[in-house]
Structures are given as structure tokens and as C-alpha cells.
Length: 268
Length: 73
Ligand SMILES: Cc1ncc(C[n+]2csc(CCOP(=O)(O)OP(=O)(O)O)c2C)c(N)n1
Ligand code: SF4
Ligand code: SF4
Ligand code: SF4
Ligand SMILES: [Mg+2]
Image 1 (cartoon, rainbow over the protein chains, first blue to last red):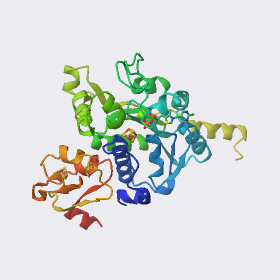
Image 2 (cartoon, chains in turn blue, green):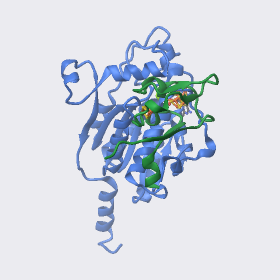
Image 3 (tube, rainbow over the protein chains, first blue to last red):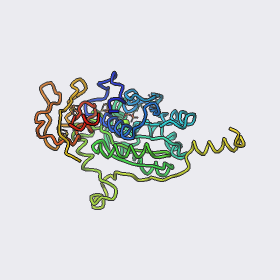
Image 4 (tube, protein in one colour):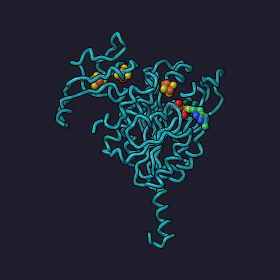
């Protein structure tokens, strides 16, 4: 299969702005799915609301474009009724960690087998550039014309503490690395989180004078480094990329199956 | 593995939005925007088939076809 075989080409060109990182996340994700040789009939993508969430319309998998913040909730329902399916759950930073924050931590805590992808552009892109729980201090947004005073979440630390058994981070500049991390996350049994920094040149970039998409990618290149690299040791201010958690822990659907067996005395 | 040899850059002009990402990060300055703000392979002979342009394109508008692709199909 080629990457295009996983696309609903009839909806292209897509709705994202020129240079929007969300398109590169889609690109990387399709390559990961292709490399794993997954059958598209075995994949379900659920998404909420946001520019990011529009991704579910472009993939030729089973897809559910649902409500803001609830992509993981719908995914949980699907996975629980059909545990044999692969669940891919891409979310915006607002979708995943503002309105959907509670769903996020509880899905992680249960360690239910699905892949959460946080398409982190540090802003509410779709609604015009309001700040999000991932914007961070001292940023400009429509709702913060005099700069934000809110601290941001660290998606990696939050996911780890909440119980995710696979946690990774990369950026849209590091597309080859993104493909690799997504492959491992999808292959992992349990709740996987992959945070991908994804540029929104239209709102975050423009308001924060980060220039165009090309310049924003240059910043991802300059401001991040691989876990264990010399660059990171020499400059701890860089944002670490790579795999932070990769553990085998009891998975929710499998544990539930055991409950069924116990309750029915093994007759089911 | 033998070195990949370029067949062509398949560029989907309907999908390309001229963001310039592929052009800026091409290690060999193979690509350019034309007068319609669409990408073209101006110096295909310099292409090393690293496929970074294809991997980073947010619009899935560029594909680097090599002699290997034919053999795989
Ligand atoms: C219940 C509800 N509240 C608010 C909204 C308005 N809304 C739509 S998208 C969005 C935020 C989008 O930001 P993010 O999730 O980061 O996605 P992005 O557009 O940046 O990719 C909001 C607040 C909504 N659709 N539904
Ligand atoms: S507003 Fe931002 S996030 Fe939305 S499509 Fe445009 S660049 Fe992408
Ligand atoms: S990265 Fe894609 S959309 Fe951007 S200029 Fe190149 S081919 Fe066009
Ligand atoms: S394959 Fe590599 S060298 Fe060739 S055009 Fe693309 S980025 Fe440039
Ligand atoms: Mg966002």
C-alpha cells in the first residue's frame, strides 16, 4: 500500500492553512500506519473539535469526528466493545488538555490500549487564537494581548504521572523521528501518548512573532534535543525529544476480560 | 543497499500551497516556487533522494519517485 491509499483524496486539498503543522502530523501518521502494514479496516480514528480534529475526515479508516474534548471518551467506548481494533486518537492541545483534560488523565490511568496524539500548537487555532493550557508563560494570544500569566502543563510529565505506559515527544520538523515514535506508540499495548509540536503560523506564529512556518520549524530544530544527547546535557533549557516512558503494564480491556471470566465462571 | 536514483518529483499542483517548507529544508536546493507559488524541481540532477521534502510536506503534495519504487510495485 502507498500512503495515498490511506487518504480520502476527495477531500483534498485539505482545509489547513499553508504551512500548518497538522498536515505534517497527518503525513507522519500515515507513514507509520503504512510501515506497520496495518489494514485500514482494523483502524478507528476518533477526534474531537479543532483544526487538529479535522484530521479524522482525511483518513480512510473508520472514523468518528465527535465533540470537543471527548475524542478519548468515544475511543474508550469503541475499544471496550471491540478490543481487537486499533484506536488512533489525535487531539489538539485545547481538545486534549483544556476541555478534555479529565478524560485524558483517566484514560491514561486506566492504561487502555490506544494511541493519543497531542497535536500541540500551543493555541486554540480553530477559534481564532485564544491561549491554551499549553501556551506557556509570557505568550501572546487573542485572549492575552498583554501576555499570558498561566503556567503550562508538561504533557510528558502529566502523562507519566497519570499512568500512561508509553510517552514520547517530537516535532513536525523531526518528521522521520515522528514516524518512528508513532510506529512504536501504535505497536505498544496500553495507553500511549505522543506529543508532536505542530506549528500554527496563522495564530501562534503571527502573534508571537515567530515568523512563517519555515521559521517556526527552525525554532523546533534549535530549541529541542534528543534525550541522552550531548546537546541536551550541555543546555538543559532545550526541550527533550524521544521516548520517556515505555513499560508493560496490565491493560484495561484485558483486565476487564478477566472480570467477565470470573463473573461467568469461565462459561463465556 | 544501492543508492536511490531519481525518476521524478511527482508534484500535485492542486494540493501544494506554496508554504516553502520543502524548499527551505532541501539539503541540495533542488526545489523552487514558480510564478504561481507552486513548487517545482528546478535542479532535479542535484537531488539525493533523501525524501525529506516528501516527509515534511504538510499537504502531501510532493513525492520523490525513484528507480526502487518501480521494482517494489
Ligand atoms: C463544548 C465546546 N466548547 C467550545 C468549543 C469551541 N472550540 C472549538 S475548537 C476549540 C479549541 C481548539 O483548539 P485545539 O484543541 O488546540 O485545536 P487546534 O484548532 O489548535 O488544532 C474550541 C474552544 C466547542 N466547539 N465545543
Ligand atoms: S489556524 Fe493554525 S492550526 Fe488552524 S489550520 Fe491554520 S495554521 Fe493550522
Ligand atoms: S512543502 Fe508541500 S505544500 Fe509546501 S511548498 Fe512544498 S510541496 Fe508545496
Ligand atoms: S529528496 Fe531530498 S534532495 Fe531531493 S528534492 Fe527532496 S529534500 Fe531535496
Ligand atoms: Mg491547538
